Image (tube, rainbow, N blue to C red; front, side, top):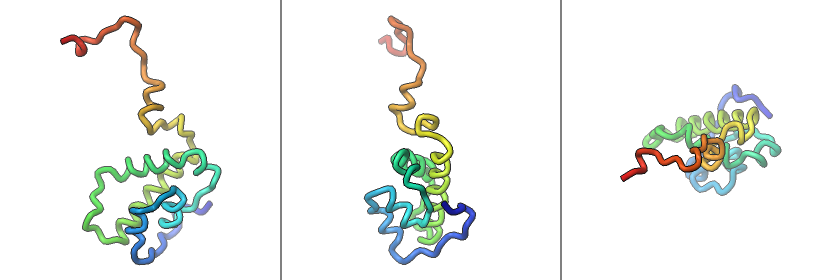
Length: 117
């Protein structure tokens, strides 16, 4: 796998439009020229894409030049990938079902005041 410190590639025209219709995690990596290992992607593909979305949340890329938007997408995809290359999905728990699996349980018969009407 290459370094994330490599200079960003120049993207062909229409890359952003193609990214919006990408059907697989591999397409995201190929379109954004982010190197990856299949063994990492096979285990954490949805977690990586979800984390990428979380990193992009709040970024308004509308009206931004395409090259800038693609560079930002490339950077956050590489960051999300590196996170899951170093940590397992269970360590990072990006999905609610995994977060809830470790949430503190209420004692049996406990009714919070907020639940009383």
